[in-house]
Length: 108
Image 1: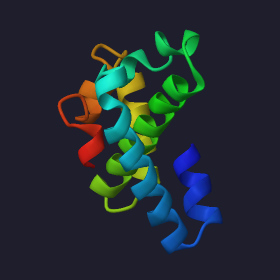
Image 2: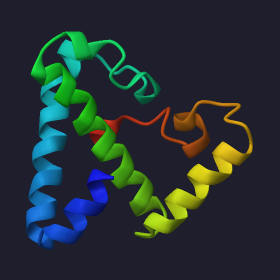
Image 3: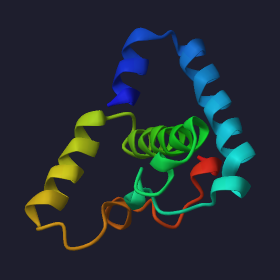
Image 4: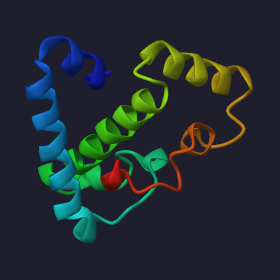
């Protein structure tokens, strides 16, 4: 997970700077690429431009950051939730199960 590597390799201020930059980029490109579900990650925009591809990566990074923060910084709890979703048979989209389907990723 990109979030883990960044948290481990960057200082807190560097991490926060990247978080701010990618949040700004999502806001900048939301109108152009839309606010499609992260469950559709890469399915549509991989055939377009590098920016459209990165848009999904920026949004997914922000979503993961939100999930980790929601679990008081515990990546292990996020993985636990993911594994529980998997064990239950993936009956609902992951974003719904994790509670990030109805939030604006740009606001996290």
